[in-house]
Image (cartoon, rainbow, N blue to C red; front, side, top):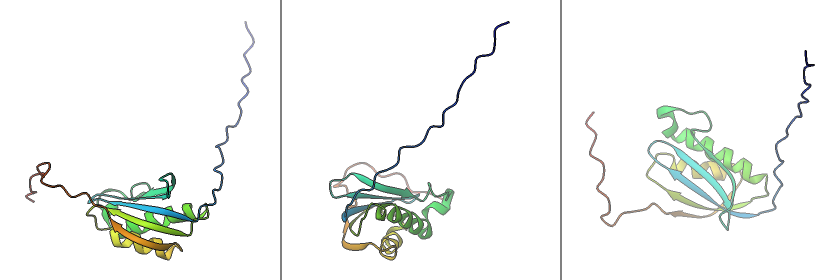
Length: 135
């Protein structure tokens, strides 16, 4: 009978993120009726950190609350401040309920907000909207 082959297991370690010294950046807040996604980038658009209400464990109708948007913005801001970020320009997209809560959370997390710009896409009579819900 052949001897059992010994397999040596090696521990794989995740690559450590290097700390970038970026002082100015942009916070992109995408607030839909179902979720809120906060991405913080440098001025060229390279993502430093991101968070969403769903990734924090909020499920179902709790994802669309202002509190979930606030928690997502705080988490993204903490991750971006590890890279040395101090001031942000805020770009908001979408009609969701977490818009103002996310901006307020960025300010209370310690980021200076330079500018707030609404970049919600508005159709010039484009696609037909979905039919109205009857509940």
